[in-house]
Image (cartoon, rainbow, N blue to C red):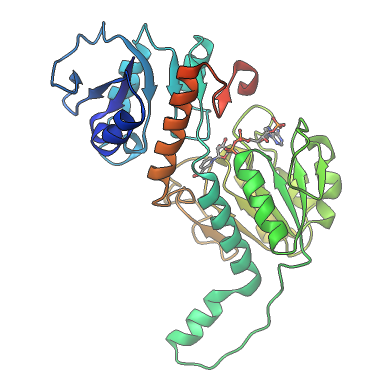
Length: 329
Ligand SMILES: NC(=O)c1ccc[n+]([C@@H]2O[C@H](COP(=O)([O-])OP(=O)(O)OC[C@H]3O[C@@H](n4cnc5c(N)ncnc54)[C@H](OP(=O)(O)O)[C@@H]3O)[C@@H](O)[C@H]2O)c1
């Protein structure tokens, strides 16, 4: 069975994959565009015999072979399964593969670091460490009061892999967590579960809203003027899902004139965030450059996921993270 990886991925993970799985052949996409077997044999790009493709994180790094890799993947007539390194599947190429009948799996390797990022963001909003940093820089002994997270109410919008990790951590800190999703699975780690149509009605009870939902037609500008106006005074909005979920113009308006206490934004309607965006300099906004998932452990987690899924695929068992056409809307 032939597996397509980038050359850096073969270097980083090839040995571990070959040790764990017999009967596989690694096919590398080289930086010069050549498609080669481990012994250096160059394959005809139109006839590689590749059945499985694994898109690894290096594709998305500076100088990564994103275009070349997906250009090749598109033309693989023999491709049966595609493992993505991303949790989101809003990129058009993913929908194209799914609609073509390729088995598509997304990754949950980002869930833990993102949930930890959310904890830090919420704790910072409550404790205001920037005040201590400013006082320290000026050698001033200056104290301030802060609010506890314990006893607060969080709303986690989107209760998949990331949302569940966020919810568990919120509850561990003593928060009451209200989860939002369209279809109940029954094992959500929340105190209460509501459907999106009931969401605005409970916002008045919520201190922290964490957006963990994907970009799809139903989440486009879910956070609009009405949503923001219904939020509790001094409350916090954290968006680690997708920029399209928030109407940024309405958010700016709400930050200036509404009840919102602050926003921590890791994702934006346009990325990179344009230099002239007023969000950069807004005193109530904390901006991170789509950075919440970039923990070093992601390489290990991605390899573990792919290796586990490869075993399942070969044994004919259900894979982790399957995305179907029904999930696209
Ligand atoms: N900031 C980053 O670096 C970063 C990294 C990774 C992922 N992400 C984003 O985070 C998203 C979530 O990742 P994940 O791994 O947790 O995905 P997931 O496991 O697929 O979970 C997505 C959740 O969103 C819910 N959902 C979908 N539409 C909704 C709606 N209209 N209202 C409320 N909930 C809705 C789904 O449940 P129902 O279908 O039942 O509604 C599901 O529970 C990804 O799609 C991606 O966009 C961001």
